Amino acid sequence: MANTFELIASSTVGAGGTTTITFSSIPSTYTDLALKLSVRSNSAGFREVWVNPNGSSANGTSRILQGSGSAASSYTATRYQVFGATNPTGSTANTFSSIDFYIPNYAGSTNKSLSADGVEENNATEAYAELSASLWSVTSAITSLDIVLSASASFVQYSTAYLYGVKNA
Amino acid sequence: MPNPTRIIINCETGVESIIELTDAEVAEMTYAAELAAEKKAEEDAKAASDATAKAALLVKLGITADEAKLLLA
Image (cartoon, rainbow over all chains, first blue to last red; front, side, top):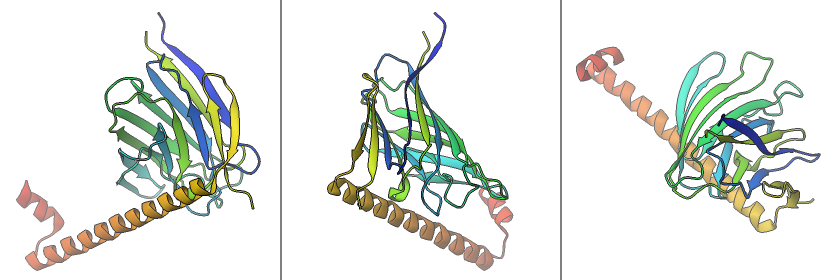
């Protein structure tokens, strides 16, 4: 059977923004999950995008490699983190960060890895690009994903999230 | 002023709900944000302190960072 890549659900943030985008009751019938985000925050400073599987913010760790446009660096986060430099209010108007992440074997009984790539869209000298690798050290199947920003920031209107299921057989 | 909202998309039904956070949830988010900020500040301070100590040690030994790497190789 050919591989499949199916849209499970999507959301576009409405007026007023939102702090959390939750995909609940994720079916266990796929092999992997893929999520595509286009997001901007209401914060003046950079905010991280975190993912809370099954509502949990614990047991996550991430290693992030990033380039700012002038320097390269890396750091560790004690979260299931997919991006660290979400478009803030001062970035070019109407631009959004583009972030893709992938969770293989999300319904299995082993710890859950995640890989992500993301870019901050900004017409300026500084614009971040990042790669991250994460591990959620929990063996339960993932049935929901909360997508949140650090420091209680909100996703602004027209931010979008698309959740895809991938079948490899 | 109303509390912030969260969007919940039920993947089985496709129904999207927009729910205003309770005061307790807002407090929990604020607390989590403060904890994360404190932890990051501690990690940044430790990294800066380690870098300072490393530089001071190299000066004390009279060698460069590259020479120190050679010694440890």
